[in-house]
Amino acid sequence: MTFVLVTFGLTLAVVLGAYWAFVLRLETSDDAAMRQRLQPTPAASITKRTGILKATRELSNVASINSMLGQVGRLAAPLHRDITQAGLTMTVGTLLMSAGCLALLAFLVVKFLTFSSLLGTGAGLAAACLPFMYVKHMKTRRLRKFEEQFPEAIDLIGRSLRAGHAFSTGLAMAAEEIPKPVGEEFKLLYDRQSFGMPLTEAMKDFAARIPLIDARFFVTAVLTQRETGGNLGEVLDNLASVIRERFKVKRQVRVLTAHGRITGWILAGLPPSLAVAMFVITPGHMMILVNDPIGVKMIVGALVMQAIGTLIIRKLVDIPY
Figure 1 (cartoon, rainbow, N blue to C red):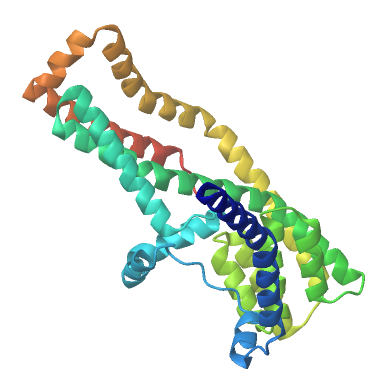
Figure 2: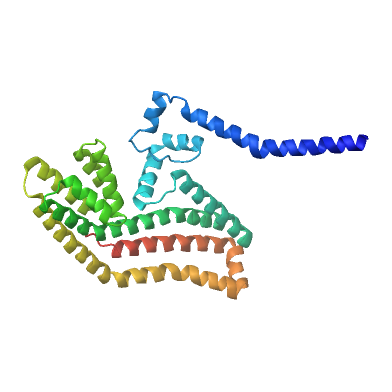
């Protein structure tokens, strides 16, 4: 009799529990969500939700790190500007954390292979520079693409002005028709002036975000026309022609300096590649150099001279134009 009662109680508990979990609980949650939606929303929350200002990108997703980086603005501001100009979605905290993790990993690997703290420190410092070099590379790549697409956007705005459209309409057309990165920058420019920012300030912010002399020419031409008047469509056509000619000269300079740049890459990459090959082929000979204190000093001196030589070659082939 007791076994029957226990079985009945367990069965009833399982049935009622399943009914509550799959029926009553869902209905209760739906009712609670509906009541919450039907409740009047405070005015403060409405204002907060319908704000038109875009939130400033935080320096880090962690609140404590974000506040700490905010206090050292001289360090975080250039990194934040480079990340924004590179078109990346990472934060400054992520960049610094990546550099620290790579430095620690390189130090541990070199320390384990060579048993030298000095070489491990050098490898850690070199590895810590890799995330910053990546950001610089992406920034340069994005700006070069912007410079290539920029004359087309200016031509599009000039054609829209000659067709009788307003300048803001030309900005909207450039934002829709031109791909990234020019399209997204013009989209931000159009949105800012549409949401109430004066066009002068929006144009100045555009020139500050794009560190190119072509963007400054464009902003100067537009602001000068607004102050003095004139045919802005014709001015933009001439500006697009000048930018195309400058871009053509820049390509010719890159072709003429290609031999020097390739030579610099080979000279910079040959010693490290040869050292790695020697470690693989004859590790005994290289371990003598690593284990001897004089050999360690020679390696450090070679790395320093290699870095100085690479910078000198880069300065020689980097022709300003």
